[in-house]
Structure formats: C-alpha cells, structure tokens
Image 1 (cartoon, rainbow, N blue to C red):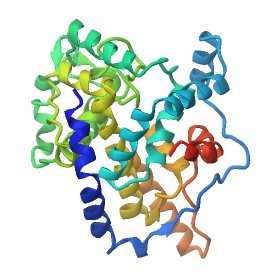
Image 2: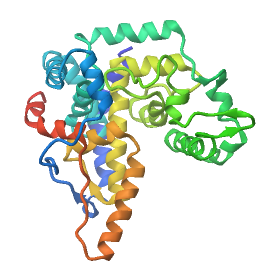
Image 3: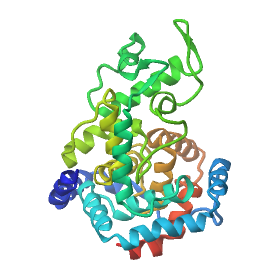
Image 4: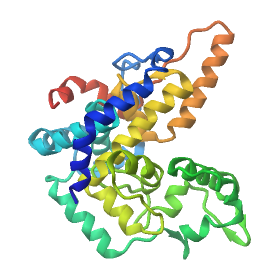
Length: 326
C-alpha cells in the first residue's frame, strides 16, 4: 500500500530536475502571476457548500481548522506531501492548498489519516463498477461515436476526448432509443454510490484519476488504472499513499496548461492552482483566457490575469499559515 510513495520519495529530486530542464525553454515566455488574491473580498461560496456545512452543524473556519490541524500533527503526511511534490516538480503548498480547500468547502476531514485506509477497503468490499443503467463504461466507450478517440494513446487525451464526445453526442440526448441525462460524464458513469460525491484526502474524481493514470505511472511507478476495474480506481483515490501522486499530477497539469496555452506561469500562486483543482477543466479555462487576452491585445487593452474563486481565495488568504507547515 505504501510502496508507491517510497518510489516517489526516492526519485523526487531526479524527477524535479528533469522537469526543470524540460521547462527552461518556455519559462521565459510565460507571464508570472504574482502571489496573492486579485479579489479584495472572497467571491461568493456556492449554495451547495453552504447547505452541506449547515447540515454538518459546523462552520467553514472550524472545517479549515480541522484539516489544518491534521496536517500540523501528522508529520508523516507532510513528509509524503513534500516528497510527492518534488517528484512532480511543484511546490508542496499546491498540494496542501488543494486538500485544505476540499475539506473546508466540500467535505469534513476524518480525524485520523488511518480512517481513509479503512474507508478505502470498505468501498472495495462493496464492489465498485462504473456503468449507467446496466451498461458498463467499457462497453459504452466502444460505441462508434467514440471512434474519433482511438488515435489518442495517453490516458489524459483519451479520456478528455471521450468526455467531449459525451458532451456533444450523448449529454441530454436520446441515442438509439436510450435517453441520457443532461449531466457531466463523471456524474453519470463514475459515481456508483451516490451523486455529487468525490472521495479521499484529495476528493479526486474517478474520471480525473483515469485521466492522470499514465503520468502517475510514469513518474510514481503506480499501476495504470482501468475504468473496468472500479475497485482499483476507488482504492487508489481513497488510499492516502496512492492518491497523493494523483493530486500532484492534476495540479501539475493545470500549471502546464496555463503555461502552454495561456502564457501564464501560475506556479507561484497556490490560490489559482487550488481554483483549477476545484473547478477542473484547466485546459478549457486556459483557452478561454487566451482568446480573451488575444482580443484585449488587439484592442490595445491590458491582459486579464487568472483569477481565484472562493476556494482559491481562502488558500491565498491562509498562505502564511499553510507555509509554516512546510
């Protein structure tokens, strides 16, 4: 269960150096997004988060303090976060920010890390399968509509393509006599227990884990995930030792996307990376920002910087305290 992180720790400095060399050719072209919040006040928090917090009879500050305290007292967890961050060439504060944001606004953290291991095994014992009304995800993506994705070999591009096909061909439509919900691909096929839930220390969505599988396999040496083996996917996202590389890979992907697509270096602003971890869709958001700034440049206007949402705002607001942990 812990062998993956031992490998991560062992190759952390090597991987970080390799990544640094790979970036040196493009770093100068990207505009550095300075630390701190662009919004003077915290953007509105979604109603669903407020409702969940009321139901738990707690407050955002109490939830923040609880996850902060878990990080503060668990030196082993902080060590794992640092070694994983080194392997993916990112500051550990990005991983901490993502975890803190999830447990402040989405779910309450368990009191002890050991509880996550126990929960991981309980889900596996129940048996996990990804399907919609009896049609497994493996059979679903064999439909002819997904043939356009066959040329993609890496897991991110493959599942990103499949998600786009879902949005354009199936979402909210009736296909061959079967109607499909007007909902996200991940919500329809990848939430086998109850809707609206992600799981584990990083609240990783199973679809996100599948997208990041190849990168995590390459950098951390963990086995590649298969959508038809739901047990392995859920064990991975619930087990803290296995899920940390997936958190790091997701954050690293967001940093790369903004550098390559929108010409922004967001690596020094954990509030922005936390925002993208929360919202997902870093590539699409980078494209939207790039198009908007191209229009602004043509009109002689100053470019827009990436902006934090309510979730990222908290991370930047608490940054000094979070940095003390590392």
